[in-house]
Length: 114
Length: 114
Image (spheres, rainbow over the protein chains, first blue to last red):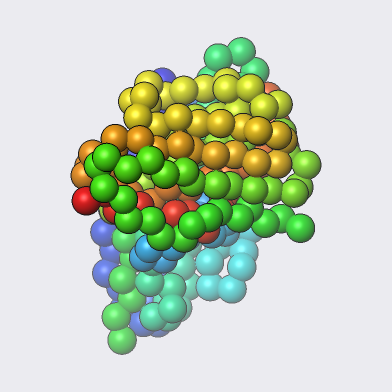
């Protein structure tokens, strides 16, 4: 069974600082996703990472994937308050034949303080 | 159009009520999903329909009854729910269940059982 571990689970940052959220998974997978969720809202897709060495950037967020290490990182540069949210990584898991389903990490609650 | 819509946005129901949640997509996707998300937890998969047939049931209690009337619509019928069923219910769709495809999430229905 696929396990997806995120750390840290809670992250309190000051504005302007940099930090990285880590996502480890236990078996091979075709895709890794990063989502953002604001309180009471749905999941917002941030990045889809398809292959080893993939790096994607959007604003102050950059995601990377190392399939050999089964590790993805979400790097935050010069954090601002608007980035406060919960961030989930999720990995596609083959489930019975050729069916796939998503397995989520527990999420990282990010709070950016002035 | 990459939108998944859900109605209602909020629902309050008593334990003896019968209600339904609705989900719709017009992206031509053939896989549709129901997730349940409790506060501060990741989404949990409940059901998956593939080509309008139930493909995955994650051992969900029978008080939750899914229905897929056609390829664009997904319903979740609720009956005799318990207060612990209060949660955010998310619908998602993807191109197919077989193969690794991105899931697109709807805005969710916030359900409160009194």
